[in-house]
Length: 199
Image 1: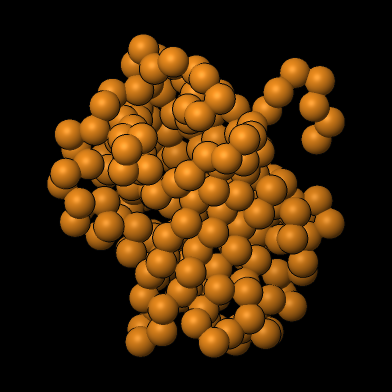
Image 2: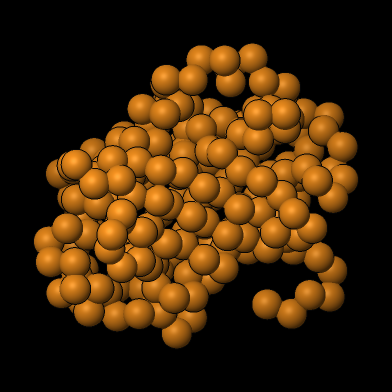
């Protein structure tokens, strides 16, 4: 889920849409479908360790992470930063196994429609959030969010898998999915929140 998550001084979404034509909404929907399918296609991850009781050490997910990069790059195409060049987002993983993920475009498109018949759309489109419990398999480098609620209707009640790696205080989520016949590489980069760090 999935999948998450620093938006000041962002690109104008209208400029992105003009560059991508009408592909951007389709790209977002394809990404969500691919991540949902990925979660359902990897049953082995259901056997991963529960997050409850996890040691909040430097290499664990436990803690608060700030989103600094959210980009989708179509094969042979230019990167698309749907939430701006400096997206705003928080991924929070508790030692007790709860997770909350929020991602907002910077600046937000507050004038866009706040309803959408597409069950895979965030409502509104400039803000995506979901929460639930999570399990993690550090050997496989993946966690699964068991979604309890959020503003993405298609995510409700699903398991959202995300492949990740942690290096120092950087969390990188990396996935690939198909948009029609073209492969798209998705990358989300987050920084761990530490006392006294300036955002």
